Structures are given as C-alpha cells and as structure tokens.
Length: 231
Image 1 (cartoon, rainbow, N blue to C red):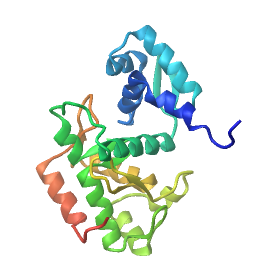
Image 2 (image 1 turned 90 degrees about the vertical axis):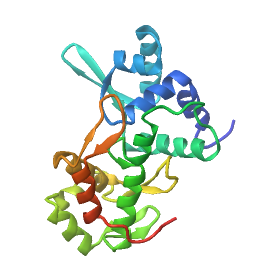
Image 3 (image 1 turned 60 degrees about the vertical axis):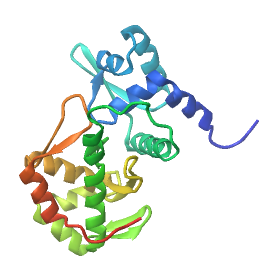
Image 4 (image 1 turned 90 degrees about the horizontal axis):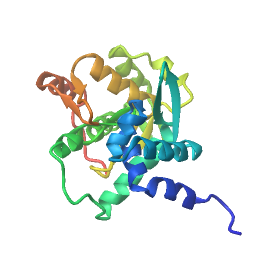
C-alpha cells in the first residue's frame, strides 16, 4: 500500500463536473442552498443532495441550518486556495471552457476569490502594497510592516484585530486569470470588505464579479498606485 496523502480521493471529489460547478459557485464566498447549487451544476435537487453529501464527507464544504433551510459554503480558506490553484493550473495549461461567457471580462478585472479580491485589480493591490513596503517577505512568509500597519489603520480597519484571528494576516493566492499572486489572509478579506462598505465597488448578483464605480476605482488607484512589476 502506498504511503502518504491520497490525492486521488480529493481528485475524484473535485473532478466530477457537477461537483466542480458547485464548488466554483461557492468560490463567491456566499452560502448557497442545495437548490441554488443544483441550478449552478445543472442537475436535479435529488442528485445535488448526493453530491453535497460526498463533498461534505470529504471535508470540502460545510453546512449550517437556518430555519427550514440548509446553507452550504466552502469548509475553510484552504479549500478556496486549492480551487483557485487548480483554476490557475487549468488556465495555464489550456484546459479552458470552449466558450467564454459575457461576464468573463468582468471576472478577469475584479472578482471575489472566496473572501478576498482577485483578478487584475486584486493583483494590482498586492503589487502596490509590496512595492511600497507595506508588506514585506516572500512566498508564504509575509508580514504587514510598521508602515503598512499605519496605512491600513488610516483606512479605518482594525489592524490589531487582523492578527487575533486564526488565519494569517497576509497570504498569497495564485490568481487563475492573471497567473500571479493576489492578497488573501485576514488583510485581504478586510480590504475587500472595506471597498464594498465604502461603496467603491459592489458585487454582481449570481456572479463572482466585483464592479468598481468610476469614482471607486479612481480612489482605489490613488490609494494603491502602481509601483513596480512583480512576477
């Protein structure tokens, strides 16, 4: 018997087309009902229940009850990172859908990656913070510098609260459309929440796309200017 982690089990769970569509729908960070996920997968509610049970048993999703309804979401950040990484691998090796949808340009510009900003503007945000020294380090060894803490606090974000959570403050996530890193972690989530709360951007219904207003994007680019190119 082979030793070590069994990636075949995870591969079989993610590899089914219906289940992969469900997981992709949950990458928007919103908890969805079985009916909504059945619609996203293009299957019946009965078939969806079977798939959801397998995903939950495999630790990829979690559910909670609210009244008569059950809502499903990704189990944790690590599932989101894994899925975004798989999307990046697929995009980089030519495993793309045969037709692009009308929302594809919007998704590539700015979208939700589980709970943080991804796409062109997500990569831009990370590059700006690193380029001006607000974030230091490389790879998974990243930290918010003293200057960065001051800049983030000036936005009205509770910087001390970011480090009191179980997740890392700064973490990179490989962006599937840009094929470069964007910012995740508690800071990535806090910044996206801030952009939405300020009305600079809003989420599209039934989509992962994030639409910045003209003034919102102008403010975003003034606060996080382009510093330098990163690989």
